[in-house]
Amino acid sequence: MQKVSSVQAIKGQGLEGDRYAKQMGFWQKVTKPRDIIKHVSIIRAQDILNSGFTQSETRRNIVVTTDINLIELIGKEFYIGEVHFRGVEDCTPCKRPSELSGKPDFATVFKNRGGLRAEVLFSGMITEGIQIQRT
Image 1: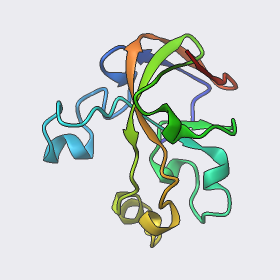
Image 2: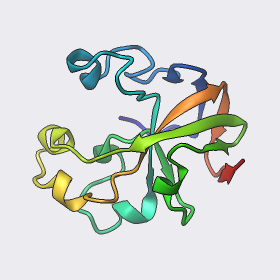
Image 3: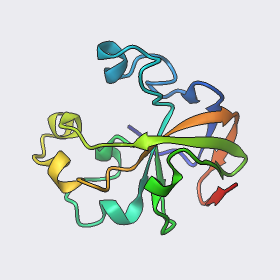
Image 4: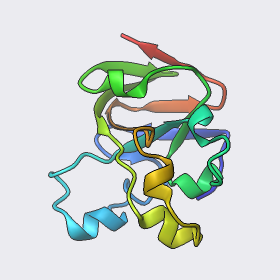
């Protein structure tokens, strides 16, 4: 995981260069790709504060600084910059980030604040500092 200041979001795939856009994500090995849409995962920066985990250790694609209830976006369309998304489901915390970071209790620490999975409906660029806009 590495921070970038801008990234291309690709319709029906995810973020350019990301493991899920390349069909190489961990969960793609254990579930059918059509079972769960994992184009992008989004988490709020405030939910990471004081968690003991860094942004990259959360394994989420996009960290937003807006005080928005991400779960309210499930089933709804929204934009981040010029990219059009649909909220798919909550990003329920699992044990994988703990396994990779060597830090315990990720699932417990991020219970009810693990973020949102979203589908990329239309391609475009996402640039650091751009806010989420509801449609």
